[in-house]
Length: 132
Image (cartoon, rainbow, N blue to C red; front, top):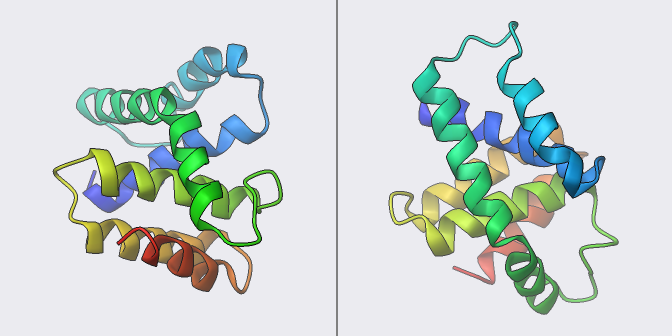
């Protein structure tokens, strides 16, 4: 899988956090990675699981940073797609040295166009710009 495809897979897995108890997420991850309809190698699955785990370790810290920078917004009021994209991009911007900041922002905006509502990409871009 390309980096873009891997990022999208991580987004789709991370999105499940909004609909499941954290205690249920290991089972959700297992089901996600065992999905026969997605063509991914064992290495891709390992990468997705590892990055997802790293994001989850920093989730409360990332949410706190989002709350601090997103004026007049709180993570509890944000759309689930936008919040998930902000979490993923912010993790990449601050903790993943392999991903340049501009790439993290651009990829989040592109995913917002694909999965979000009409103004999602502008919102994601505006919030992430405050961290750049």
